[in-house]
Length: 411
Image 1 (cartoon, helix red, strand yellow):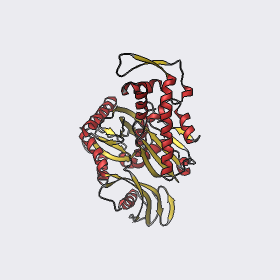
Image 2 (image 1 turned 135 degrees about the horizontal axis):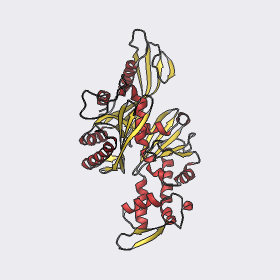
Image 3 (image 1 turned 60 degrees about the horizontal axis):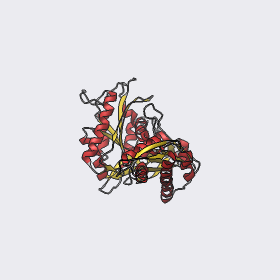
Image 4 (image 1 turned 90 degrees about the horizontal axis):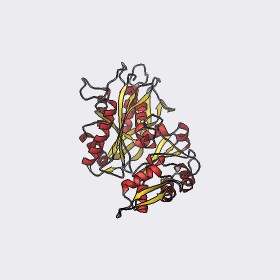
């Protein structure tokens, strides 16, 4: 492996907890380990049982540690939910260097200035996202490093969330014997690998359809402008199968994964399987077409709800950039055809392009790695380029240790 920093992302979903370990350098990102566990103690994206949630996190971490061969100490945690809100902010500072060249300290100060806004006591800042920098009145600057100026301004979006919900998540991570290196908004992270710059500029809806919830993010003019969460996902398809075939939920999930297709016209009566029935020792014989007749209506409903929610958010249900879909549900065969029938032809499905995580369910976790690389690499990589693996028994602080100061500002 090349010399770099090990970064760990933690995605606490409704159905799965996923951990991704990556070695990140300024030049490349390499996924070196993955861990997953069945999510317990969570419901519709919120923590409802801390002890069970801690157990799930620890199982996923242990799985990743065995694969990579290191002891994970710090993680970046992804958050989303209807408690998240966005608001505009503006910061301005004077350039501090004698030669008036803008450096990282100036950018840090202007971002800190933008962070200073009045918030209710129950709200906490999750992220500050710059929309553009302004140097002595010159607008439209994305990276002011090295420019000469006297006055540096930033127009930014402040992402805030419920302090209670965030603290419960952080409490679970801490009880799992981990430290939090940072908090990342999952829709922003997922957009790093799902959306092109043109799509963000034209207007696009990113939908992450998971097990228990669907997260929507609307981008316009290159920036995130709104988010929402629908309490519906793959578990509802599983429950419909369990009820329709009178079988246990665990069996219904296995049938969905092994035989399920989203379009009845693509199903085959020749694909036949046995289903154990609740309240009976007998097994019923079911074909793939019967299973698809249960799956297709629920999948259609999910996409109809997505379209209705986008309209309720005040945006066009037919954005110029279309819809980009990801999340575990999108791995059901032929689901794209159902999506296009409900959302229009401008629909595509995205999966991470890394060996071992080439599944839509890993999009958020891999997106977090890319987001960290893009936003914080200068802070995460040592000037000498030496690797500091996140192991508990090393001497001296890693560069991630310095993230504590950044993180302390958020809570």
